[in-house]
Every structure is written in C-alpha cells, then in structure tokens.
Length: 395
Image (tube, rainbow, N blue to C red; front, side, top):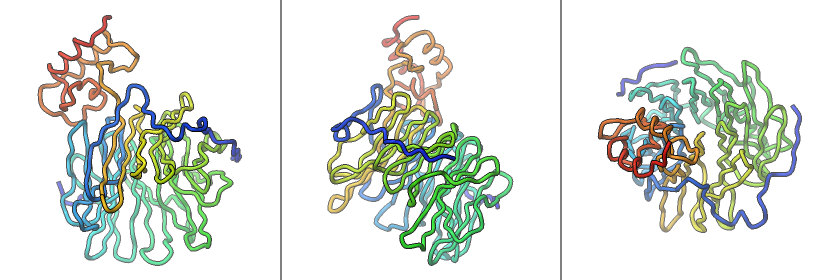
C-alpha cells in the first residue's frame, strides 16, 4: 500500500572495552567538536535522528495534551515544524535524501498510519483500523521503509513489514511473537527484535534479514532490544548486561552496561550509560577505541539519540518534576574553514568554497557545504568568504 494522503555464527563474549577506572565520571568533548542546544520545552522533545547532511528530526509534545505531538526538522540552524494537528505523531527517522517517516495515530477512530514525508508532501505507506497498530518505522538510503504491525490489545503479536518502493512484504516469520523496532542499512538489510512478551520473564532475540535470508544474532543473553546496523553489516543491540556488537559471525561485548546503541558506517556507537543518579550520553569511537562521555549533568537524563558518519551526535535530555524541562542537544563539528578536516586550511578548502558558494539567504540542505557556513546563517556567501580569507593558511 502506498497512497498520497492529499497533504502538501559463533558467540564470543569477550571482556567489554571499558575505559580506565574513573573515566566514566568525567565529561569529554572530542577535539574539533562543540555541543549546542537546538530545542527546549517544558514538554517532551524526544527521539532525535540525524543524517550525514546534518539534518535532524524529532517529535515535540506541543502543549500539555500528551496526544498532541508534532514532527520537527532542524537543518543547519533552521527549525521547521512539519506537522500541525492535534494527533499523536512520534518516532521520526530520516535518510540521506531527506526523506522522513514517522508513526501517526488519529483519534477517532484509532487509525494508525505510517507516514512518509518526501518532496514536502505526506504519503501514507500503511494504515490499519482500531484493532491493529503500526509502530517504529524506519527508512534507509534506498528509500525503503520497515515497520511493525500487529494486534492492538493483549500481548502484542505482529509482523515486521518492508516496503521497497514497489510492494510491501512480511520479512518476519509467522509466529506468536512480537516483531518490531527495525533497523536498516543502505544495503537493504534489516535487523529487528523478536519478543515473547507473554512469557514470564519475557524473552527476546535479535533477528537479521539479508539478501532474503533470516538469521538470529548469537548472544548468551535472553532479553535483547534496540538493534542498530550499518553498511559494514555490523549489528549492535543492548540487553541484560550491556551492549553487544556482531560482526563477521562473532559477537563481542562493547560495554557492561548501557543501552539504545546507534551505529554509523565507521563503526562508532552512540549510546547511553547510567550514572550515579541518572543516565548520560556517550560516544564510542571505533578508530581508536575511545569512549567519550559527552555531558556531565548530575540532574538530567541524557539518553536516546543518533550519530552520523561525520561523528556528529544528537540526543535528548530531560528534567522531571517540578522543573519539567526537555530538549535536544547536538554535538557538531566546529567550523574553521577546514572543510576537509585534514588540519590545514589551504587550496583544497578554497576549491570546496568555490563549489559551495551560494547567494545570500538561507539554503535548505547545505549538506557537506554547511562546514563552510562559517557564520552559521544558513548560506555560504561573501560574509563566510571574509572569514575564510582570514583563516587561510596557504597552498
């Protein structure tokens, strides 16, 4: 179903790569990066996702009514509200082309929908009636969409569906399990959770679908969730006892605690890890096996987010009552004029500047050219060139 809505295998559990004692308690920002806040509200602002163009999507509770949640897009300093209604919309995801998917629940008649935002228009990928629900959509760089669909009541029993731009098919097995929370890479692979929600205690495993074949990720743990995958065909997830990563048929333990990992195509992982009284946002950098605690906040919860291939990270944070504050943080690259990030501002960067030059005025999707928007005003113009000249170091 795709309709225009009419709107504009070996288990190797080695020791975790834990940093030295005491490091967990200190915040450390990677060199060449800075942290800014891009949204703040007394109501929930959650689940930010980022692509390699630096575009960030998230949902925002727009007032005291918990059923009124809207989808927002942040693009190089500009914040755009994509939806404007009084229904529940959550779980936005964005790909490299700027296509976005999310879940929508209309009231009445309790009709769930999977929405695709493409070329500034809404499309309905799937919808179901009051006895079923659609959850956790994801989109990859091929434009494929995956999501869970199942029963509304009792123990959730459902299927994992995949739309490849032409047809929708079920890629999970027919069973009495809950198949949900997909993750996709640019190769068309899908990882997801298969859970027996009615069991006491509940159990789950991570499934992986690649080139038409299904397999179960090897793990010694029995309560797994939050899978993520990348174009290297790595798969990571969290469970009872930390974060695991599977690659080339082997599973290893990355951390002995923490959750909701997100992989980029470099093998870096953004995740949260519990502190003394809260949870904090972390980045594992695969290149040198370093861990960075990105925030040192003893009061707020800094949790689920995402990381792109520029190692830029987004996450949401929140204070509970009585303060009730929430927001989205962004670890972004510092803009110095070094567009190639090779430590020099030279002729190579000059050529990049010439290719990126725009007229004055905000430009959507500057993508890699955003690193030459040195005054952060949404364009690459003569004002940025003046700054670039002052920073230029030679050939």
